[in-house]
Image (cartoon, rainbow, N blue to C red):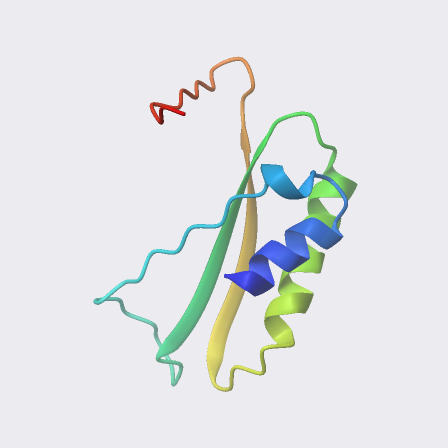
Length: 95
């Protein structure tokens, strides 16, 4: 998770406090071939960034993941756009 955060932060597309990283583990999955380990990162960002910025982001994150030296793993990074117009966020945390 730290590698994903570091890669997103190094892309310089976001302020550090805007980056949130969450992980979901899958107990059951099927991967054809020898790999039985995978890391798939789905970067969800608000719309407004062009293709070159999104590509730089995925390259920055994948570079950090490669530094982990995970052997025999399938590693993939995807960038998904969230429409600003339809996105809603509300915090229910009281301060």
